[in-house]
Amino acid sequence: MTLLEAQKDMRKSYFGGGPGALVSGFVWLSAGITALISTEKLSVIIFFFGGMLIHPLGIVLSKALKRSGKHKKENPLSHLALESTILLFIGLFIAYSILQVHANWFFSIMILIIGARYLIFSSLYGMKIYWVFGAVLILAGILGISFHNEFYLIGILGGTIEIVFSIIILFLESKSINSIVIKS
Image (tube, rainbow, N blue to C red):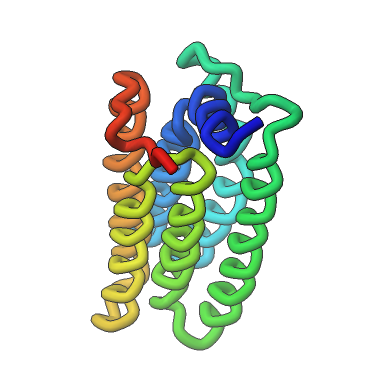
């Protein structure tokens, strides 16, 4: 399987990653809104446990959109997908540690990590949109730390960004626009 074939298989199987990003956006939005109307502690709990549901719910949504939700067994990019998940655990450890001394940076640190992971998705799915997606999330994280935003703000902003980009990805993938596919 060539790189382009592997990327095409990932795009086709998971609808370009759009369903997972959409679910993730709703998890972020739920956690941010919870922080606004309730407590930071409950927000982090929702973020953590909601985060565990992103992949399985993304698969369910992919299947609902008539995609398999499963890549070919021989696809070499499956390892990259799994390996990039390690970034999430590292980010969660760092963000949780920082939460103890500077709570308002929790979501900013997580959004930096998620943004970096989406840069990897550019190679995983062969879609340049993930470079923009990742960069926007990283910028939001930097601004969140730089301007000492309220705890909830980056949670809500991150969710909004993810939902907007997931809709763009779903639209582009449904139209199979080749201009977003990396050719080499």
